[in-house]
Length: 167
Length: 150
Image (cartoon, rainbow over all chains, first blue to last red):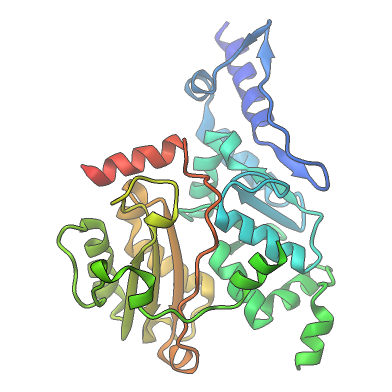
């Protein structure tokens, strides 16, 4: 019985980490077991969260060139700082990236902070490497470093021409 | 959306006075004992980073939290300790200095970490983006507000 509950909880957690592949809009849903909606509170209690989440995160951050942990979704950010990251990426023409909504999954929200050793959300990863939060991305955007970093990822920034003209 | 993006993409110089009402005006050198978290942040950053210039702004009023909260902050730290360090390294130093506050009562921390030279050539305080209400109904924020009150 415990193993059934545990595996269901893990399934709920994995489902709750709403990875959004753009341009699909983020969708909120709850998984059910036998017609009953499992509360997220019981899922946290039953799931061996920390080890699993950290292991999953190691894979998640490498799944895409650009990975963002944020509040809300790129289509509907729920935080001004998370929205700033989305807007900056959009300005550079980066619309195809993995975005994880930490508001959907408390284990993910806590886990990513431990994984990155970074206390706040949003968090940005380039090629599996932690870049920083909103402030760092904004400064990289302002000083031209973001265009260069995207180029290293094989992404031609939409602002590359503006960057060339400035130099 | 574009005007909003341009607003955040371009740092706006704001004097200390203009960021708060005159009733709450004080310089960064004059801690208010009724704001313990702000005081702790200022003390720790001063002790650990020996800044030449330091600004600690409580931006909680810009977010969906009760008046008088100390949950959302913006800090500007100008220190020679940042010489030769990447942005990430600088921000980690600030985070480490404030790790207790970040674990307990501070929910958001916006950071600008500049060397004296960088500050001299561009003395601007960045402006935080508009809140989208994410703190409303967020139990993690509620726990932090409770920790801040205690």
